[in-house]
Amino acid sequence: AVGDGVADDTVAVQSAIDYCLANHKDLLVDGRCYITSSLNIDKPVNDPSYDEYFTILSDSGGGFIVKSAIAMFSSTLPFTTDPVVALVRFQDLVFESNDNSLAAYVLYDGMYARTVFQGCTFSYIKLLTASTVITQSIYLIQCNVRRFYGTFFNSGAYTYDLKVTNCLVEA
Image 1 (tube, rainbow, N blue to C red):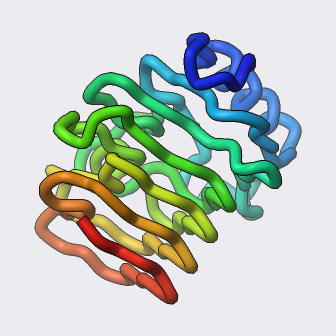
Image 2 (image 1 turned 180 degrees about the vertical axis):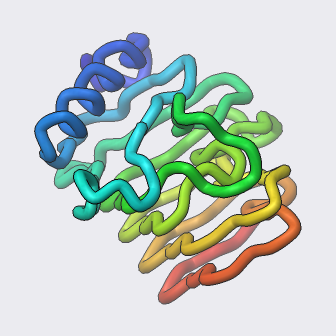
């Protein structure tokens, strides 16, 4: 990935995610990766071969930027009403959109469970909008959430185990 926030890094980042999942490695992001379509994390719920967290992190202020109304992260796993992806950690990343009027989100629908955001910054982007039945086990720890438009976290019919700890959240 180029990581300059301008060049389309979607294919390179998706390749890196696929490699890291297949080899049980974490992904270190350097720079701001511009993505033009959802990145897929196929880490099934309750699959014993994936019992450890998959972490996407940055130690240099890196992250992801979108310039259209997309969800940054999704999955190709079959999905109807319950989460299908689990044990994903996003650490010290920046998630941003270039326009707060966009309907851009970090997570697609209610696909993700047991997902942790630690030390992340959200700017002009929302976390989730879910039309599904269940949204569960989403943690935000020491995150900075600013300048989003509308509802930052819009869950399905049931939400449980949502934790927001030591975060700054303001629209």
